[in-house]
Length: 559
Image (cartoon, rainbow, N blue to C red; front, side, top):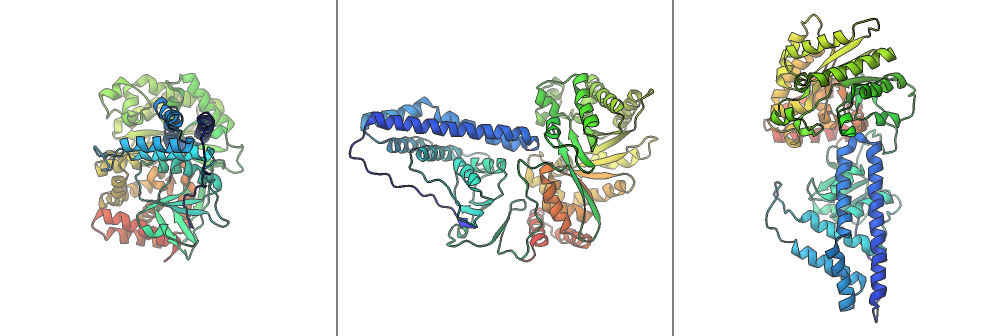
């Protein structure tokens, strides 16, 4: 690892400044900076198409780049620079610095504080610094970033958006950055570029004088200096062909399975076919079709999409989840949801019967045409009548000469569903499999919105979830049960869930390798001991810190 420092070329002194020549030079540099930004934006748009599973992170990065483009096109900003060049005889670089300084001073005061308790103008000030750096580079006054041989991780107290992109181009594999906020634009760009980053407040990281061996684990948030053991990480890139599932063995020989999630049919169309082995897409989140089309597709359009997946990609086993519309997903501007935010998942589909019949009809007909069995998952179940209604409708649609096998699964996303599931198992036609939707279930336990990440993380380590886990495992002994959700892609959470007894996980596709790494480093005995050590701690906040620390020891030993 090395410390990254900004360096600038010395500007040659000028005895006389030609305003017209200086302004032409500035306009040329400005246009080059705008073209660079436009190219970065196009790059992000291309990656958005290739990686729909990371659509939110990439969208945030696109918003940042678009705001930078708007700044470089601002008439006041450009007019002030022109005035200084022609009216005071200043150089293009000096005029740029003066205007940036003037605008920054206007926004440097802190009239109020945001919800996170920090100044509201800090992002704008960093962005102005970024504008300056971009233009200075094309004026020949900013050095191109290059990494010394053998250095792949750098430490930087502060970074701008353009510096993040320049470091990525230079081949950086990880970044240690000074204390910053989760919404900082540099972190937005790091997430979008998938560069591992850990934010630290310890100034010693930025005073190092020589490179040292470092292992950066951004998934847990730790920096391991001089690691004794390197975990078996599988690095992925934007251009890598996604692997949708894998079966693996833990250190003790127990088998575990991991499968990914699908958001758009285009994700499958962009991958080579066929795969050499059978793979499983653990969850096809079909509601993203609506966000892609910006309208509700017709039954025929839906059937065409499903037929492609079932007929053309026979090497893939796919679990189709029915539309899961809700207020917080913004996929559907529907009056019923606006009037009743609790009307989501299967509750909404039963309320809007025509939409439910359209999707189920398309799924069943696509399966009949392709002559393939299918698995359908019902979102946000809570009452027996809801499952019975769907089972009856599926049986009606599947009657006739082309009858195919349909597995119907129940998604357990609230405590009512968890405790009602045993009753569902006694029905004449019970669910064929179960998914545990951790995002909503943990949100209910924490009594916080699912966006409150820390609260959700504390909830999974709580005694309440441990009690629910015993009920879930009892269900899992009778029918297949999978843990589903973002948290299943966190290494420490994978260790916790494995220690409780779960062995089947549905995670974001790009985090399969991360979960694989933890499971392969873990034995069944170590997993149970991990749970016991965490549960001994009474304070839930301390439990979270302990869980992350113990996960680090499992992966890397006592480094």
